[in-house]
Length: 280
Image (cartoon, helix red, strand yellow):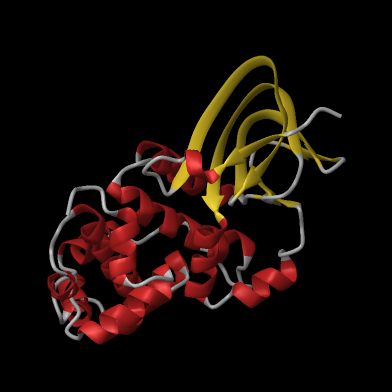
């Protein structure tokens, strides 16, 4: 057997993930390889793709989402295919699991599997396709991390760890407008009651819609957006951390530090040291 290639996370320059969209006419194949520091996700939209994984065969059809673990030996072949492939750091995936409080459940249900496949329900395929397209366009940008986090939460809530609940793919007419409003008013200390006034709906009704659309509460979503905005500012500006804390809507620096570390598994100063893109 030939020596497999090993793809290393260190080749990702100024990116939180790596992603590609492949469209291959005729016969196509990819040599045997393994990974270090990340795993593969494939979403097939056309054709049929055959994975050889640790001596086993996994056949993917349009609408299938396939996971290949970090350590698995893996090759592929297909004909007339189109698919997205995203590489995600294990540490980022674990952060999303911790954010949802689902690390233990994930490890029990999926942790030891070298690969798995999920058939994406028809009503979710367009939404998944849009996520992949946005991640592709945002690769290497400050918006990329926010999108990646939303994408991972979406996968876990809607496809992998979802509870038995009805799914309404049709968002209310006010949904996109409210998300834009939140994004523009993250610094407001009274953002949650202001949301209700903005769309003239009760907090209880808004909370139900958030749970149905994102699987989380409005408070969790606001905190997530504030912390992602803070991460962007830490990476792209020289602003003092205390100013960033206030600018994204937190009143207490100690609380901001605690919530930031819960999500990013490092302090704001550690995050800045790792991700800063300009000269301090």
